[in-house]
Length: 332
Figure 1 (tube, one colour):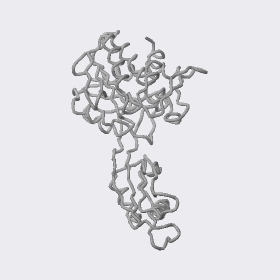
Figure 2 (cartoon, rainbow, N blue to C red):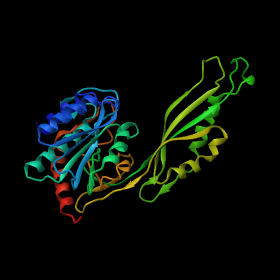
Figure 3 (cartoon, helix red, strand yellow):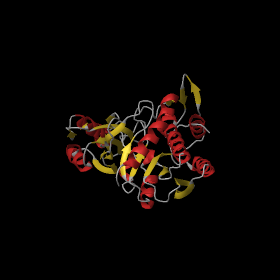
Figure 4 (tube, helix red, strand yellow):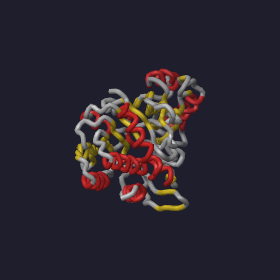
């Protein structure tokens, strides 16, 4: 099965986060048929992480995630691109990594393994589980859409919930109530003017308001409201929380999730860049010195027209194999 066929087969299986089971089973069977020793690590229900090794302690591991964001839509090929949910984030990458490992295997190289995890798009529970069974590898090459550049660093994530409390009242008597929605809006407006942490290489922290909810009915003063914010951090999450002190006048602030920013290993002669997204790498600390590389653009990931250029995906096979050879040649 060539890289494109493998990518299409994976894209056509719905593995939106929480539904990875079928894709994991199919991929495990495919890898076993190619001669790899495959281990399925239970994560939750029928969701499993997969390792595919020849050497039980590989020096280099190629890794990415099996899950993708909703909604699912199947593959199609048009204008030299593979379209479909997960095409670039990250099933096209996964297909390129498998093909690279198969090529190395055909050359007699058994020191390169594969790790594919679930749950990257919603908190990285798969990566956290995988970190408990690390084999002692020297290098981890993680795959995310980097436009075929090595990552020099990635930002972290801090997910925060703002909660406002009010008092319900009839909308004809607003003076008898306290609007939680008004409090939340005041907090969000105040946040726009707050200075957030900066760092010379990664830049300034930024955020999006991802979720907002509140109220009971249009004719009731709202007794409760909340919003979830996603900060792309350049340092410790505690620094961002400290910056949010002024909004606590209006709302309570709860940390939901933190993934730290990371610095990454690069190799001479290959273009590198800093990326605003985060990856599973901060949770795979026991899998070796991390690198980040993948075909495809983050600009189309998570969109309604997610796609990857087929030629770039196929060229990534050569790059993954070349990276593995170069790392194997480095002294341990």
